[in-house]
Length: 233
Image (tube, rainbow, N blue to C red; front, side):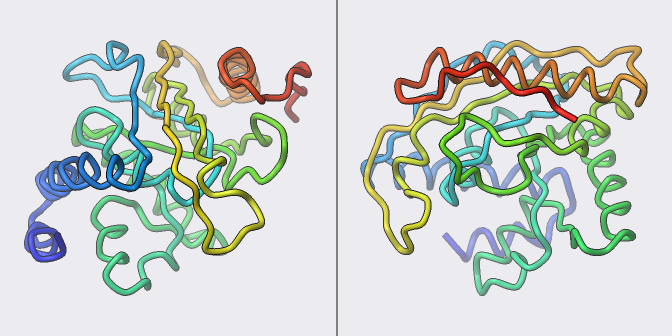
């Protein structure tokens, strides 16, 4: 798959990302069932043609990225750590499908917001993991960072909450180079509108999406924690 991906890397966006995703969807459509991890999606009707969304998803393991990138309908990009671009071969894929950011650099973070706005303006969805890093806790979700919600408010773009189930069972936290086959469920929930919201509504919006995702996860995951969602600061 590297040769066609390398070829499309020379195209401009959004065509580059569209071709890359088309290749990736064929590739993952074969690969994931072969390794015993078929992906089943639910809620695709929430995506409307010609409408862009900020998709916020929980993050449990490294396998989340090859599930979410081809699994979100339409052309989409994600936010990736700058060091991922340095990985041989796979770094090329991250550079095509992702917007690279150095989290320790203020200028890089500001530029990443500009690039994400540009992606939305070009008709692409942004797929973001508001927990920031993988959730290694026993709880359904970790505390959310502000970035995804600032983007959605500033761009006046609706948010689609999304939840991955069972990826933590495939790659168990704390076990290195370890994986077990398991079905993956990828659910999209109804959009949360941001029209008319300002940054003054940031905490309210973040808490609303967090509670929607927490409640849905605890209802649909057999081994999810059943305690009420904590308040966000």
